[in-house]
Image 1 (tube, one colour):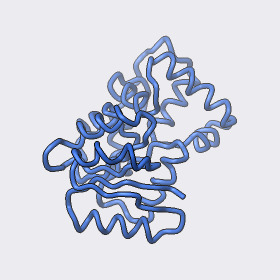
Image 2 (tube, one colour):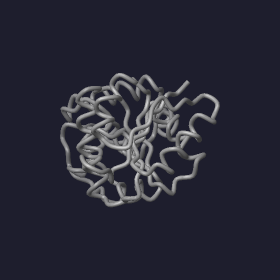
Image 3 (cartoon, rainbow, N blue to C red):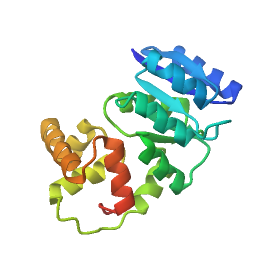
Length: 207
């Protein structure tokens, strides 16, 4: 069972998302919030598997809310669900600790698939966002990373899970985990979202 918390100020959207999640086998909407302040207090106690988070919220901005929720629950996966497709916001959300970025035109089927992918270790992004992110990359020498590590990082930046990376590069999942562990160490990061954010900021991989 995948448990989900929703942070969304629009009541109709919030209730529709909750109905979709609760009405799907294998999912449960554990809580909903209309602003960051309430979410920051409640989500650590709810302990969901994933948080679906809007950015355009009343009061505290969503980016700051992500950062504060992650401070209280460092291992929690937060997926942005927003109308805003600006590359600067994508970068800020990843830096704050989001592990995925979806636009609100995402279909219900793809939204549920993205939640599953998140729990499996992926970093889902809407196609438009993924293309924008990948298109912003340029090859930059980075002595610390090997060629294979750079390939793994590029796959990670496309939102692929460990299994998907293993299949794409024809290596085992254990080998993927070992490469990612080395990438984290060399880039001095502690999570996939931080690794993707650093790759985006420093242009460590090629499109």
